Structure formats: C-alpha cells, structure tokens
Amino acid sequence: MPKTIKITRGLDIPLQGEAVQDLRQAPRSKVYAVKPPDFHGLTPKMVVKEGDKVKVGSPLFFDKYREQVLFTSPVSGTFTELIRGEKRRILEVRIEADATDDYVDFGSADPSALSPDEIRQKLLKSGLWPAIRQRPYDIVASPDQTPKSIFVSAFNSAPLGPDMDFVVKGNEASFQKGLDVLQKLTEGDVHLSVHAQKTKSAAFLEARGVKVHHFSGPHPAGNIGIQIHHIDAVNKGEVVWHVDVHNLIIIGRLFEQGIYDPRRIVALTGSEVLKPAYYQLISGARIDSFTPDNLRREPGLLLRHISGDALSGTRIEGDGFLGFYHGQITVIPEGNKPQFLGWIAPNFDKFSISRTFFSFLMPKKKYRHSTNVRSGERPFVITGLYERVLPMDILPMQLIKSIMINDIDKMEQLGIYEIAPEDFALCEYICPSKIEMQTIIREGLDVIYKEFA
Image (tube, rainbow, N blue to C red):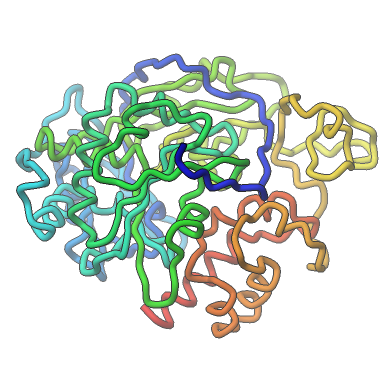
C-alpha cells in the first residue's frame, strides 16, 4: 500500500447541490469572454481591434511586461466589445461566436521528440502558457524560469467540487499527454496527488512518468498549496509550477491534434440549482446559455453566481462568464435578508464549526447556505481557530498581522512564499472577526512580488 499523507486539520462544509454524474452538452453561447482579471498581475495590451475576425487560437492580447505570453480566443467569431472598469482597467474581451469554429493550426507533436524550449514556444503561441501557474506569488508562471517541480491535483476537496474521475473520463489519453509535456518543462519531478479513498480512475492511479501521492482528510486537502507544502515546500528563491486537470487535458489536446481546443467539463452546483449536473462547454462561455431554466425562482430570492467554488471562487453576474481556471459554477442565495434574533435564535438549518447551532448533532445533514456573514468586522483577537482548518506549519494570525502592518521580513519568516489566497479561504469562513483574509493575503503577495521579483 502506498503511503498516505493524512490531513487532519480542515473542514468539509456540507452544502446542498452536489452535481450528479450526468453529462449534458451545454448550448453554444452567443458570446464568450476572456477576462484579464483571471490572471493576477496581468497588464493586457490588445492585439485585435473591435470588428476583427478571429479563429480559435488567434491572439487577443498579450502581457505588457512579458510580451511572449499570449492570450488567445476560445472560439471563432468577431471581437465585438471591450469591457472596462475603474481607471479604464480591461475586465472582459468579448467575442461574438460564429456558428462553427475554425482553428489555428499549431501542428501536432510528440512531446518526447521536442526540446523544452520548443514545448514552451508551442504553449506560448497557442495561448495555453497561462494554464501554468507558479508559487510563490500565485501568478502565471514565467517562461524564463525552470521550476524545481510541477504539481497536479487529481481531486477537488472544495465545497461541491467536481469529481475529477468523472471529468477525466474519456480524456485519459489527453491527460497523459499533458503530463508528458510537463515532464519536459522541469529537471525535477512531476507530482500527481490523488485521494486515497475516492480516486478510482486509472488515468490518475496509473499515470506514467510522475510521482503519485495519496492524500486523505477534509478540505483543503485538495488545494495545490497544501500538497506542495507537504511534498516539496517552497523556500525563498525557489519556484514550483502547477496545472489543474481541466487545463492539462487541453494542453494534451494541443499536442495530439495541433489545435487549441478549450472544451471542458464543468459542474453546475449549489442549493439554488434544480438539477445539479455536469456540462461540457467551451472555456469563457456565458453561463446564462445553460443555467436559467435550471435555477430556483422565488419572490424576493436573489442569487449569488460564483465562477468556482463557494469559498474561493469569483462572484459573477447571472449573465457572467466562466473563469479561465474554473471547472465549477456555484449558485447560492444572497444573504440579503436579516433574521430575527440572528445567531441567538435556536436553529437546525445553519451550519457552524462551533456548537453555536445544533448542526453538530446532525453530521450528515446538508445545508442551504447563504452569503450572509451575520455581523460586521470586529477586533482581530487571538482565538486559535485558524490553526484548526489550515494544515500548514505556519502561524496564520501572525502572518495576516505582518501583512497588515507591511512587515516584509516577518512575512518571509512566516511563510508568505508558500501560500495563495485560496489556502486561507477556510480561515476567512470561520473567522469570528469577519476579516477578509484572502484579500489581505493577495495584498501581501503583491508587496513581496514588487519587492523581490
């Protein structure tokens, strides 16, 4: 039996709305979007102008400070609109899709016959380089660096997270081809993490050319940052890369077929979804192309649409677009209604990590969780709660405080290089002080990046 890394600290939030293993074909969206904010730290410079025709794989924009990193169109169509936010920041590049797709031909290739530089160039030209992210800083990997190792997580432990065994079904060959690509990009190891009890797919358990690690325990066991910490921790001056399963399959298709084929299987989840299921769609699709008839509609009910999971996903509108790194859409109620007596009232329909509510008497119950935070920000005091849900050998409260006072030396000593905002999502969820920890972590990473990168 392989050795299992047991995660004992963490929390599985029992939400209603897990997707059943029923794969549906989502209707083709009329509009698709690539969203620069998905790629933190990116300053986009446009290549196309409004009205230009594009193919799948045609460049849309590039990174101002790393011009070789291109971002390409997921569909054939016409570039119709540039959505800007404050200070004219580009938020969305929208493409009006044609009825069928025409692909840029990048040429199929066997990764084993290519040099690392040739593989880098193929990924850069196709627009798939942004699929590779790095620690530290939690940004798109630098093509000028060579990582000490590369990580892939083959299971998702986030609330209502998609079943990766189901996602990879039918895409086993592309997944292995993607792993073959990663092996050429590092002089170290490619690490593949599976769940000791739940992972059954041979594509993961029998993957070739990688080190397979078995994990067990509650969320955040599936977070790539937790796995890196327990397998090959990041120290100052070191770099590791990671790729999610969805994008690794797309990378594999690039080398198999010679085209950028951004189809992915996405889980539509949440208590407000009538029939949670899996949908095959194209990256960047507008979610109202397949969600409206499958959502709960009640008088006065407002919905929170999230690209990603409920803890660390990105809030979008009902006509918003799927994020580049997301394989899940979550829909839950907005917390727009005050409750009489608040948390003081006895209640069997609320979940709590403590014994504030009676949820501890019903460990198998699933909850219809809203976005209500039940109070405002309070004094930030030592409680010892955060250590219960963060399975890393760092001091979460002290790290957060060092970021808040902009103490760079302390940030380094307390482990800033290992983490990403998602690693603190559970700490934020249980925080009695209602501190927005993920935002603070991102600010700290930005400070360190500007100081040393």
